Length: 486
Ligand SMILES: Cc1cc2nc3c(=O)[nH]c(=O)nc-3n(C[C@H](O)[C@H](O)[C@H](O)COP(=O)(O)OP(=O)(O)OC[C@H]3O[C@@H](n4cnc5c(N)ncnc54)[C@H](O)[C@@H]3O)c2cc1C
Image 1 (cartoon, rainbow, N blue to C red):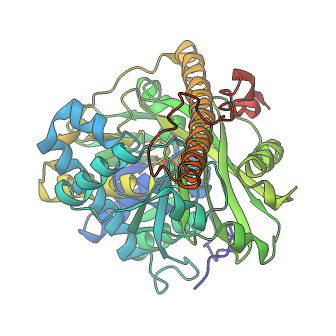
Image 2: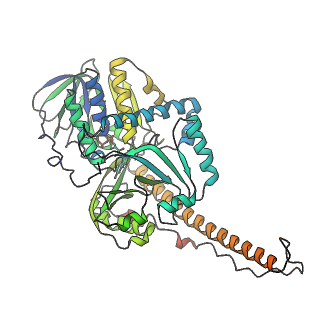
Image 3: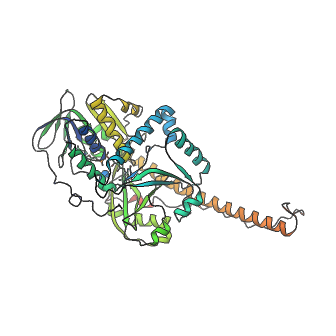
């Protein structure tokens, strides 16, 4: 079944009318937040037999969870090599396994029977902006042999046969990674959680919690709830219930656009069917609805209306695939992700009965599903695998100053990625010139009957001057669109 990205509102998705909590209630587990994290926990806990109440301040999938691309890959936002450096090979390997279990959870639940129109398809391609052949091979070996993850290395030619652009070099193809309609998935999760017995209350912000006793108290504007466990899954908007926790997250808003129909020519230019992501986290795209491009790229550290990013998305598409011309962006969407200082999610028990599941950053599909399994199973079965996340403590993200610094770091990261891309393309041009030169030299030698010998007179054949490296101003202005605020 092919993906359709046209029906995302609650009514269109056949979602039941919103119910607000208007009476006092008792539950085993109270989950704050009906995004991917909160709903995954609710589903798993309800299936394990707990009584679960989910309290959502706005509506299901209101933020990032209802406005994302639905690409599911193993691992974390933190690159694997850095994960190993920080916690060692053994623990990194266990965490990687957990992240794959998160992806398996989604695959098992996102069936057409459970979630009509979810459109699960296999295969994700990660492409590099720079020429990294050697590094790629060692990474592939590690993934295949040490981390039991199927991954296939694509040479530059193969990447460019699939994607008609000289922006990308090598690629890693993950045949078992997949994508679903990201904006439908969160509603599908809610439906499954309800079916398993969880109760979900929308328009019900939690304004305070008292987590000191065995039975904890949760206060909303119109009712109170008592529960043995509270799970904080409010991401950056958690606010009053535990403000210090919100301050450990750096909010980063990410935006995406979907083009109007592009016709058959899009398939000639973008020949890969699944999601494509570049290894610097700048662009992320795939074809949806048969011939439309869905493209995620710009980000800010302040809230802005997604409509403002139609232009930047269009320019980004044009800079990667100029052959597509001036595409029309017919839809935009976006949401805030919460990024931690160390780059890993926050999963665990803060004090007895008070749990946290947040900080999933830009890779929240598999990781929030993993959090759901870990927390529900800890509460209900006494499993303690969440402790693998203990080395990643709650670190203050620096309030406003830290957020500005975060934006600068993000801007720098994207600019340096663009500059590295320009340099890699420059080097490639030099290599091509070298190859042409060698061919001309061999031809000249053959013509002179001198085999592979160099010309004897000490006079070398004339060579074209190598192209000059690009001036800094030529580097792709990947961040030019970032300064748009509301
Ligand atoms: C444009 C975009 C594309 C993305 N694409 C991908 C992708 O392809 N693959 C991938 O893995 N990840 C992707 N992500 C990242 C992913 O969407 C997030 O990591 C994930 O959705 C975070 O889920 P969450 O449940 O933690 O947070 P949220 O979605 O923010 O949900 C938290 C919920 O808690 C509620 N809440 C907060 N405080 C309270 C309170 N006090 N009382 C009641 N309710 C409260 C909020 O209203 C909100 O609905 C993307 C993100 C964006 C923005």
